[in-house]
Amino acid sequence: MRKSKQGKNVVIYARGVPDSIERQLQACRQYVAETGMTVVEEVTEQKAKPSDRLSPSQFLKKINARPDAVIVTSLDRLSRRRLEVQDWLDSLAKQRIRIVSLAQPTRRAR
Image 1 (tube, rainbow, N blue to C red):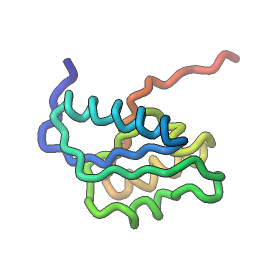
Image 2: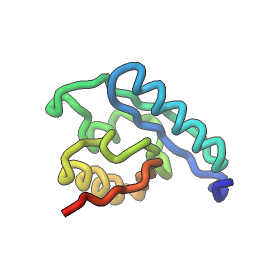
Image 3: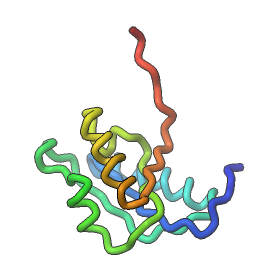
Image 4: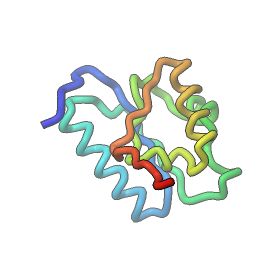
């Protein structure tokens, strides 16, 4: 069982094709239920060109709640580009919002 994080309000973010989005939402909802967090909002994006995706500032404007964390199944749901993922991490950290990824980071072979 995972450690309880009672009282934490979270936003779930999922991006991709409809079937993928639903799988991501289910995985995030299960994690939230297991940890005692509260989902205050879910944000989804259909698969889009990189230029059409939400930026961190657009995301913050879109959400109605001020969460403690944003839950994603994997950091590549934010972006597949490392610099853009770092932008998300930095932008949300300035607002004291953590990003929680359900996927364990993997190391690439050199």
